[in-house]
Length: 192
Image (cartoon, rainbow, N blue to C red; front, side):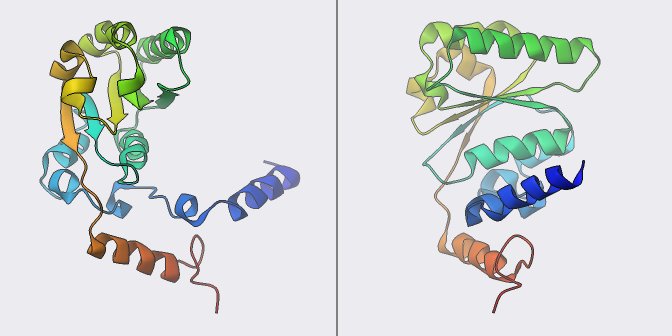
């Protein structure tokens, strides 16, 4: 990386909102949802054993679904491809699945396909995911603010583990605020 590239990267990082700067980089920095990511809990065990199948994250906005999807890739060593069901169509979905097959064929760890707002995909788009999910080509990570038992088709639902996100508690929010105030690089710890 040359001097100008580093300066551009620094400028972009300096202008990130606080929430983006403080976004966890490892699972041990993740706050909330201890009922499934806490020590000994199901998702934590799946990650630690590197036996992550397909998962659906359901819950209100702002509870960490997207952040946790990114952390799954970091913690399992798989590459992540991200789609939004709001803006992506069948072509983008097929491209992402072809990419996943290429990753597996090259001997890479199983890639993760994160589909945000998966409930916005129609039934045909959801069905297009099935063969690659069934064959273990891709670990699907779907996020939804809707009830997945009504919004995601039954075949895809039966091949996924559902994790219900809860709103952050006051203690979780306080912990995040304390981190923001103390962190000298990503937060406000170096300011008066």
